[in-house]
Length: 513
Image 1 (cartoon, helix red, strand yellow):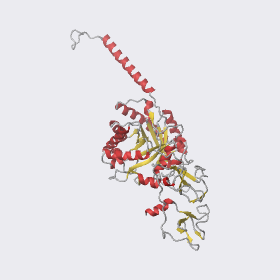
Image 2 (image 1 turned 90 degrees about the horizontal axis):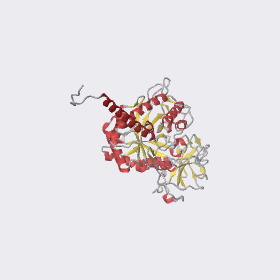
Image 3 (image 1 turned 45 degrees about the vertical axis):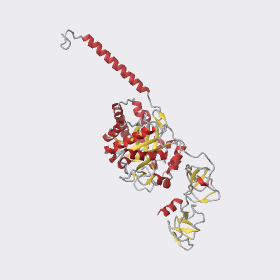
Image 4 (image 1 turned 90 degrees about the vertical axis):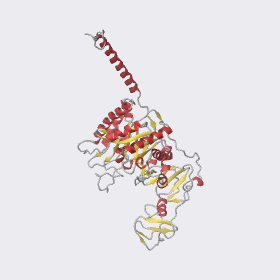
């Protein structure tokens, strides 16, 4: 049989066989070589755990004072816009960056986290509020808004939480990716770690979540990792344990990300994909009635994460890692300040963080550790101290702030007579709590005062109810319970005294109003 395409040439099955064999052997060798290289390019960073902290929630969570391994990394949430036509970054839409420093002492608290060798991660977006990428109308303005936050808090890792309406907004998604690519281009991809936090279900990332990752890859963003929000599955826990649903979501997400990166001509091994993944669980009672993530679920997920080499594990939130008080009306409804399950304080963080020893500031291919800019001096100077220097001769009310050895402390109980701030800084016997270092450039804050006539003078014959306020010797006091004839200065702020002195913050609020 002659070939019509090549006259005079006979078709040779032998040559075809040899050619196919060479192709197959070459292809296998190439695949084996690539696979060998990928399998040996395992991540160098240690997996890390981080609790989200709702910065603006009340009661305030003292994330700066936590020193256990379970609180090595904190994810501070959320930075958003104040309104749809305001590009300025705020905390929860309630505080500008400057206002958060004044009202929440946030700059100092973040500096304290970093000074203790821990990582502070700023989370942009979230479920509520107006996302910056939607309110900032140009890439340059958005990049500037991000930069204001990053530079103010001296952080090297950000968490971009995209959900709700902003997830399906392709225009703001593109602007967000371009702005972050611009920041990385200006500072270097090895100095800004970017984690994307996206919704997930049992099938992994949602379609919009997949599109979000693709947009960031298309714009050249060096993604440190993709964190799946593995929560609110809408499945009754009596039917299926939440841990099983989380495992399904992560396994499916792993396959999705493997394909996404490969399609972008960025080839990673299976190990590397797991290391570039995170999971955030909602501890205790979720937003869905009948769905609850238990401590047993936490143990299961911790084991699964460690076995597969998951790069990050997080929870929402440290504010909720407490058992609800006995008088809380409905443990079956989600709460911002407790989990809705029986537990010890910090129990979920303790289980989930087991063997997650890494830092959020470690890159997969290197490490970047932030060191805050704090003064080296230890001698206190009233001219450069934001609060009065502590004195053993003074009596301090609960909530009073002082400076001692270039650190700011807050009084936990009173009257606080003679207790040196750095004697005990933790535990139930502590008279003071360390807030953080005195920062460069600080000067004394003016002491707010209560104007004459704001409250009536205390009178020995008048009966006062809980919450009533009076003036005594120029100082404002508030009644803790019904009292008559008890002087505000007698055992002020002790357990037996019916009076407590107004805090500086309460007086400041009076002045502001």
